Image (cartoon, rainbow, N blue to C red; front, side, top):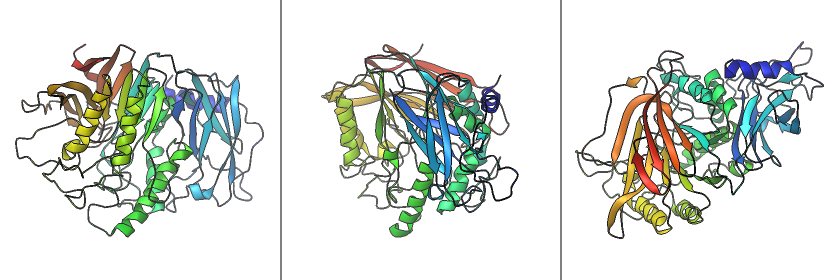
Length: 502
């Protein structure tokens, strides 16, 4: 039975019991189904995780409120140790309010480490789909981790088949590395609603609602907990810090950024520590997966500072200017401090733009939208993890709409050697079907080992001794329901950085 059918059946066979505060209009025979956007879990810890849903019987209502009334609504939630809810281990009631678009974030604690759980919500006798979550392993244990990561899901460019295939891989954890939505009104295979570039809080809520209503995306959320970071399209293409591409005054853009950040938080399974404060939201954070892996999740968009290049979007040659930073000084220090703690065998850095050096045959100018444009910042980080003795560092990257794999090189203490590995996931849909014959590797960059311009995601299976890597692809996203296949596989050995053939 498919995951989609299984989850909806499970949600329908249990008894409804007594309802909570009804949101139906006076005299209505029954309320519209409120869980059109599905459910999600995220931010797993050894004793819990975050549960999410948003009540939105009409997700595309242009006022951004999803067809919900003004009043608060009580939302029951349950967590069970079995998928039929025979043993409920945690439960409670959350309140969904209009100011947060009737979204719900429940922090569940006091669960057992390293095991599966199932969860659901109920409102007015109506039951949500069932989601599968899991807690992280206990510190001191290192069971194998099946983790998938993805990015760049332009609704207009194609169907979300890759999300469906991710659900079918039955992962323990999913990372999304940015461009969860796109702000433009562009349409190719499917139409955006509204069919324009979004700028207001209502616009962003509707756009998130349209994406979240997709059944393939819901399947991936229902299959496993997610850990998310953003890139630029959650707000606007190529924005950097408090500046936008077309030089609108910063005050105007701050209002737009605050709206986008609010809608992002409302639609992601994030903890309250990530709640926005106007145009600010601290998204960089650290998650532990037992003693196997530490996830250092970066925000390479919000804190960009570039004195040499003004608005942060131009191509500039002064990449080694110490004043230029893609992380900001505070986040850079936080990253190196965390890596120096050696909390686990593997240090996994989840971030947005190409990290390894890629030389071009054109000229020496460096793009501001990769780490090649911030070489001083990158060198400090690379030197920092070497001096701290981190030998199992893997950078996980999105953004560029193609699969890439590269060894990370550094000239530290006079030794040019491999010090880490970068795995870049292609897009879910962005860029359309792609080209199966593509290969952008070149002799200029011998450390870059693999490139493929097809849609898909990356699957990793990590143990204390190695990480197995599969670059998964679907040949078309312009047509629904294509199969997935593995285009290329590698192995990374703990303590021996770099890509090896399996």
